[in-house]
Length: 129
Image (cartoon, rainbow, N blue to C red; front, side, top):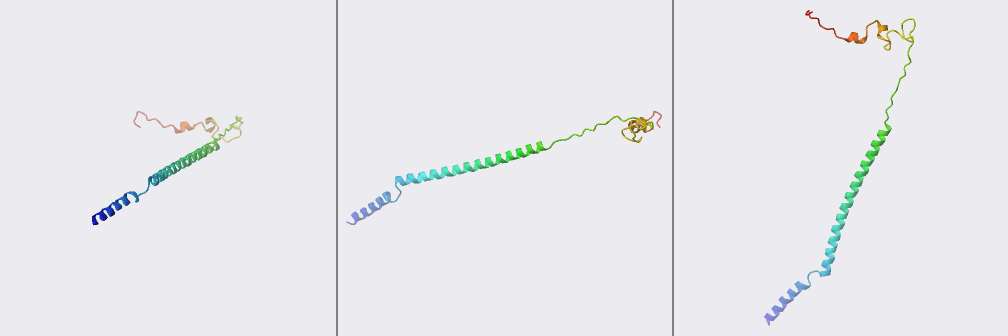
């Protein structure tokens, strides 16, 4: 009788361990589905974060381009054109009543030496002097 009782206890333990201990197929499927949903939510969050970063970078580039375009359109170059009227020669030899040392007067009124004649270097002679 001890052997029959021992076999029935061992058989009951095996039956209990195999049937009653683990989750059912429905529970396993629900757990698997929850795991897949979690993975999908994490991937979606990662994609959303990347899209937000790309949108922020694109917005920053757009603003920088707008700032550069605004800067180039507001920066203008002005050119001043000075009109000179021909001066009349007076009897004193100056033009338009200006002094003889005026830079706008021709070289003849400055004493005969032009700026290019004064700046020209003297050539060496063959005599060795």
